[in-house]
Length: 409
Image (cartoon, rainbow, N blue to C red; front, side, top):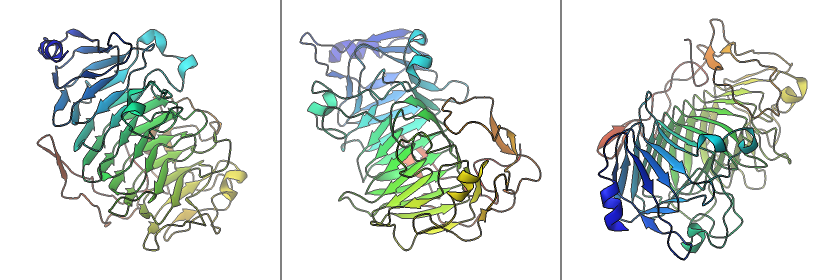
């Protein structure tokens, strides 16, 4: 198998490469490393593993096609570098005929699961879609005791678990997954300039953090996550204490499709430390919400956020209470329709339960938006000096003086 993979990885540009990792006994344990060349198509017929101490680099324009019968898991014990571009992103997907309304929430392959031995994982201009399959006793991740280590769990698009590792997700899209987009159990993290949408059939967050995380979360758009855009927790026994700095994000219609009323935009619990600044909450089910029995660290900062609700129920549910967190210098009206953000192109009366995302929507702001000039530009970032991954420096983007992920066109 190792020799076969070595030959396949030397294929020419635009080649279609059939990565068949299925073994005779029906299990899957195919090892991969090296470089998948620009523009190639990789057909994944079984679970694949990047071995500890090795790396896989996926160049721009590569399409990774997952077999919808085998529903492969993409396991990273070494390092993974997805190096797409705006014009030619890397894409983890399924055959065109398997996509569509019947698979709005994926389930057609597993996810990218990075074990504790993964020290660097980079997704730059990468699309993850149509995954989130449910584990069984036969799943490689269950046998390796990865993620939640048991059958019956819906896999996230991305799991990362090394508190000493580096995780960078920038300029990317996560869509059409059954539950969580990301489930992060430690790491030095930058999530910036990403879109998360059409995820969560009956539960799940866009970005879910546990103990051991230091993260800068900026300029992301989250649309209709089933539960929260951000679930921020210090649960677990890892160090350091999780400290999330989330600024200049736009959250729209989140939380409404959750059958029970847990969260709805940002959820805080278990002494997590969080700075939440310059964020735009548009028709989210609730404002920032805390677990009153296990609240956030008292050093947390909430400021310069803007809330908008198309109807009165929504407005009422982001008013400050014991479990809805208030902040300073915020724009939080009391009447339906107050503080219209003036998006370039998004109907504010879009039904709350809608999960379908229209790629023609434009969340930039028009002149006169109340979000313009109301942001805070002098906030602390963990990685203002950057994180190195695969020999490149990735810097947490600077905050600006408007609220939300985008300013004027």
